[in-house]
Length: 62
Image 1 (cartoon, rainbow, N blue to C red):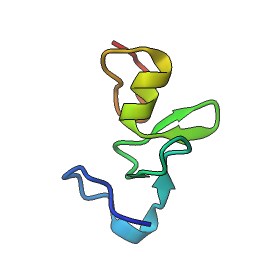
Image 2: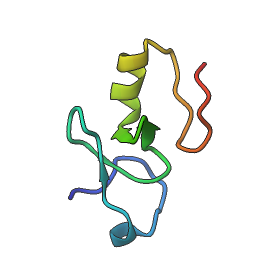
Image 3: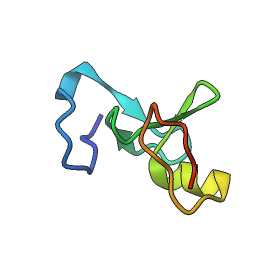
Image 4: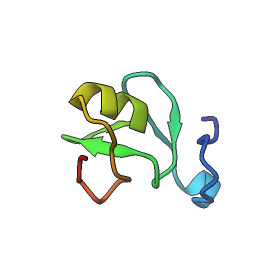
């Protein structure tokens, strides 16, 4: 799987997350888990109609 596009160093091979919608690689900092499925921030934002989606673990939409 390709590397995530963010500048956050997530420990590379330890995590292989990808968006179920577009297939983009996501590190644990950028992945947005929704109902046991991982989305990239862009797809999660589109799916939820939100202006901004917080990083994984926060579960806050703004």
